[in-house]
Image (cartoon, rainbow, N blue to C red):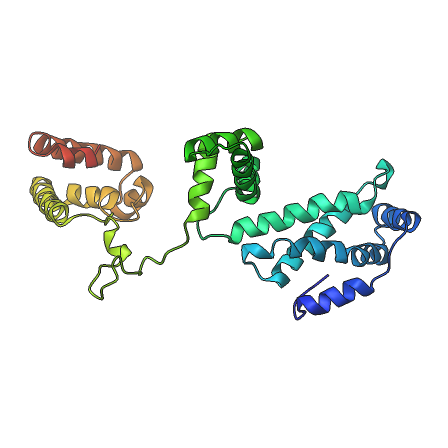
Length: 292
């Protein structure tokens, strides 16, 4: 059911006007969709239970998501439920669909709560939607017997109540208490305050590293040119074509160009590299490694 262009009031009115299915009709439609892929049967089934999807979506409005988006997610959950529903199990479709609708809405809310992903494990999801309620319940119970829970005790009891690790409770408390902040927001209230982005570490090379790198490369280039000058013209050409260009030549192509066999080019190359290595191995291990 496409919801673009509809608002939640229109959708609610349409859902209230939809037919109410008895158990026998619901079963017949479910079989028609499962066994025959009858799209009309699917449409009747989905339309009849949209009021259920809308009702469940409305319970999540307090998380700040647009109602129309919540209904869209609820309808997606409803369609997933219809696609996976097995009428042979003897369960009413509405009972089965509730889980899928709720899961779809919860996933949407958690994805859009913050730019930083809140979490997707079962314990994190349980904490996200139940933390405040369980905390309030535990504090009421403690107050009823004249006790007051500190933050450590409260976290311990929440972890036990929901069956989740205590560090997950601490993490979720921090996520729910914080909010997204622009990196361009000022750190202080005055106009001259630095922006938060100014506090980020620059992962690029520092000035000293840049200068050292340039110096080293210049020195290596000087040593390499000096070593190449010890080769004859043919040897320099072979080395350049085999090692110093972006797309190195093959022995065969050089042999064809120079009127020599592939094996002869290989011998000349080996001799040239031997000369270069002898000239470089004492002065520059770095350049020597380039020719290895």
